[in-house]
Length: 317
Image 1 (cartoon, one colour):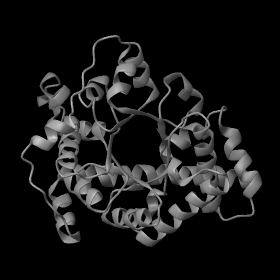
Image 2 (image 1 turned 180 degrees about the horizontal axis):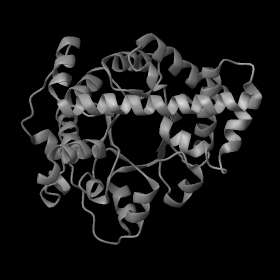
Image 3 (image 1 turned 90 degrees about the horizontal axis):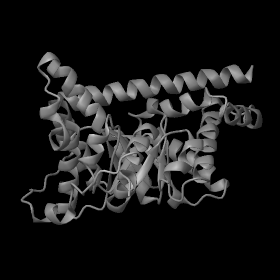
């Protein structure tokens, strides 16, 4: 049994890609997308027709509605390949606008439902700002399940759990990137590998906290840089993994044991904490890594969303 097969016995494996033609060989249960992955995909000859078809069918509609049509077209293709859920992201430029995030999420879900897809198969991805978490809480109450992304700080995870969010995506690799860059020449790769990786430690803390306190929110580790990070989080609820790293796991037959355990977490001494808006904002502010990576992530997704807008506008001419 290869490591990918072993991992699937402990953890739900999710493919982190907009390239649905690659999905079948790894047989993931779910798939996630983001603006950067969709932008990359539509620039490929394999997928350009999805953008062109959406534009042709909806050219009289406002630009933002055409964008959602493109995102949902990708989601529909992915759902033909995976048996579970697809995550589709709300425009990152709405990350600090609760009302606009709710409206966009409802529209995306309506498009899926019009195509005959049940709500249970779609997760709406929203950035883990205070406004995003509050928007997601309202959406969850209306039966629209959410995936809170760009999550770097423990306070973000606590707030998501308290809000009854379906799933969170803590970003292992980007946390690792920040600490490695911050340390510079003093960084010791071996000393920060496996369970000592700062991104792995963050997800482990969140997982243990949720299991200790009976929080139902699913934890899906994301943004991996190497298979060592994945191996150190075996046993996590879900892990979303790029095709390159899925292939590396598939190519290895080394034993892979679970690293995380709900039973161990429940036996641990982990006090409950809570954050109101002021407490959340202060805790996030105190975490330089999380503050910087959240802002950077929103900016990067916003840039790629704008590029996708430009591609669609060019197609309209």
